[in-house]
Image 1 (spheres, rainbow, N blue to C red):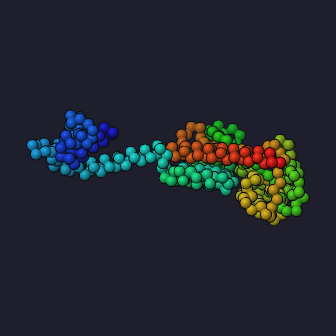
Image 2: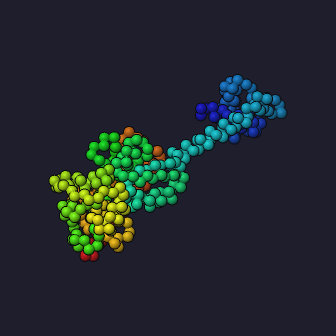
Image 3: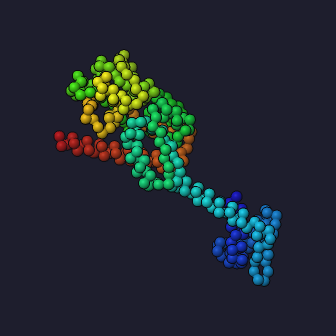
Length: 311
């Protein structure tokens, strides 16, 4: 196909210049090579394309008939080549992501915004779904990659650590546990728990801790969404164990108490199918996310060190 495009380009240039020598100079090829290309095109089409005489070169009747279609074909091919080059340089494309709701409500929007400032030609679609659905979307190739948690042995998934999301206890003001410096799972469970449903990664993490401590949880309410769980806490219906980021910026009517358990960190990973190759656009977004998150982690550690020295 590439050779045929070269032949078409030679035909179009000769038709434009009406001179083999000038066309060869414009295309930076020898006149003999240009002649061969035209002859091969004529053999391929089965018609003669040019008349050559002392006054120059003119198109034959067949040449005039095929000029328009060949010009459109060449222009379309050039557009395809340029588009492919854009894709290979990750300047255009489409990327689909499945991510946990807390990630979508937390760091992800700002990270995607900064990425699109660099690559405005790339379109990014984000699905905020629970942990089980993140893994399912990646496995079913519904998205390019996911941001969630790895469950047990997902043999077909590759996980790249992104960050750890700390679990905390949310209690209403004046609650018995609200004045404590930290709360254990046993203490929290004694006051009735409000937890996300079983398909949530938070629920998986809490039940894993309960299993280690051989503790039977007193779950008072299950919710599909974390804002619902926080609304139940505000209504004094129990206490919730959720990621610290779930509260957002408004914590005036709720108390956050550290969760006293060394397993109270939820590992957030970038999830990909092991047998899948990312597109250049998706690969660029992955690199951007990893870089920005590592910078954030470094800045966080630096700030913590400065605060510790001041104390």
